Amino acid sequence: MEQVEQKQLTPDTFIQGVKDCIPTLLGYISIGVAFGVVGIASGISVLEVFLLSMLVYAGSAQFIFCGLYLAGAPVTAVIITIFIVNLRHLLMSLTIAPYFTKYSTLRNIGFGTLLTDETFGVSVVAAGKEGRLGGKWMDGLNITAYTTWIAACTIGGVIGQWLPNPEKWGLDYALVAMFVALLVLTLASIPKEKLMHYIKLILIMVFSMYGMLYFMPGHLAVLLSTVVVATIGVALEK
Amino acid sequence: MTTSIAMVLLILGCALVTWIPRILPFILVKNMKLPKIVLRWLAYIPVCILSALVIEGFFKKDSTIVTVQWINILVFIPTLLVALLSKSLSKTVIAGVVTMAGFRFFFS
Image (cartoon, rainbow over all chains, first blue to last red; front, side, top):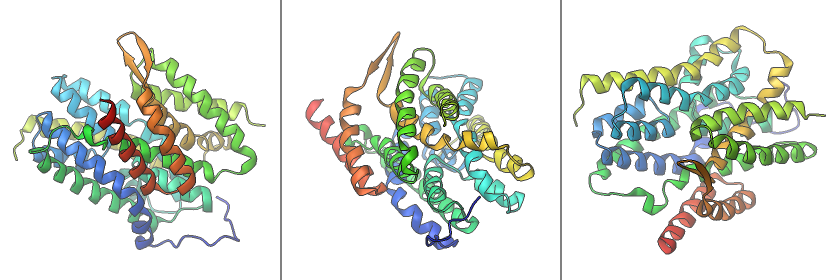
């Protein structure tokens, strides 16, 4: 990766990673609490909410887990669906991994294990600005997000025993709002002359998603549309 | 605070299939160089995946047809504006949640 010399770079420290995670925490907390509440409402225990958030650590997959569990889906169906829902992490890891080749395999497994939509978003914005990512910074970001997520889900599970219907409070929209902000921040780091190209791709994405939703569930449409539109992006490059 | 062996095994199964796609690229990329064309393709992934996740909420599948979720699009507009103007994650999230709660309060 090329280094951008003139700009002041983010220090590669754990504490800087923690700081850069803070803006996303509101999202983690509201979604985590919402998940805990939904989990309890769909009949899983607080301990299971805790285990899911610690071991699966993926918002959308955890929600889908509850939905499938409530619907009484067979074990294989649950596992295959979770696999497909989270397959987008493969693309995210593939995007982030090239920045960390100088670190040991063990550290790399650590970076990958704690990768989420949000830490991916934050690190992509940082990488877009500076052309590099630091390992200690990444650990700070990841571990802050991870511990906050587990705490928020578990607290949500406890609250869930009293509060039904988290959707009423608009908390489910926190996730989408976070994606909107991350998208805008990612676009902000793209060179001006390429911006129209990206806007065009986003318009193509609208049609791609709409069309694909006729044939497949949303999580699969996200995955396939991403692959297709990124390929179109390369093909339309000048 | 209870669980069963079957449930723990199910959660572990889900954990495993989530973990593998997350770490695999980190192991592979470390041990080989990606071709230039793949790197160019990967450069589009962030914008594509984030916009797909946002756009997913615009539509809803009703048995056979895909319908537009107008409320989500209406809430998206102020959320986007706050994101563009503030360039701040936390402000955008607050704006989105408050707008959504407001819409649900008045229109449902």
